[in-house]
Length: 251
Image (cartoon, rainbow, N blue to C red):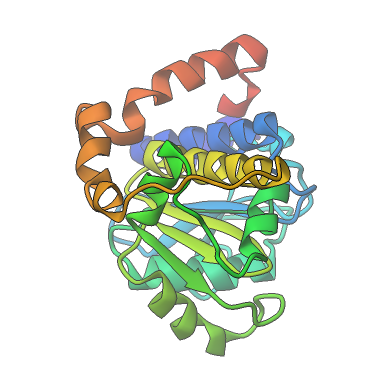
């Protein structure tokens, strides 16, 4: 099956499929998956408004380049697949892909500490180096139930705005990126921010905050740390790690 899919798509689409499948495996490796109920998506390179998303029913550790489902912005499959897609995933991801040309990738998870912080009134606190990068580009979206209604889309898009990070209240975390590497790097930073916050709060002591002036320079600091490469600086090493464990995501 994987050979026939590869033969049917462009080289650019196949590369995007491999990268997105790798991201699914990495999310599983870090324990951020929620059985089959969250989703990562990537726009298919080219003029058509198509994107790739996980087959509904596969765990993240099972996802491969060939098994990803290609759909249009109306949720219709544009290539045959034995699997459907998560309707809530389609609502969230299609809204952002349609509204943000720069959002080639949209990653959304229900991680334990991410949901825990999303339920806190104060949201993300400026208490760690990781948090300043999130706070420099963060929106919040209030919970409206499982994301199944089209009328929620404009509010979701408005709350994201031009930001890279969106905290879905009582629900989880979302990041956008120009490519898979950047979206994953953003998700990693968002997750670490929430992990650190929950642990710091559990310690019971008074927390030391970071000055707002430092937060305001976070984006420039991030560019310097990654030499302007963003998530692409770490991405090859992450792929090497995956390959040592299981390289079947490439199939």
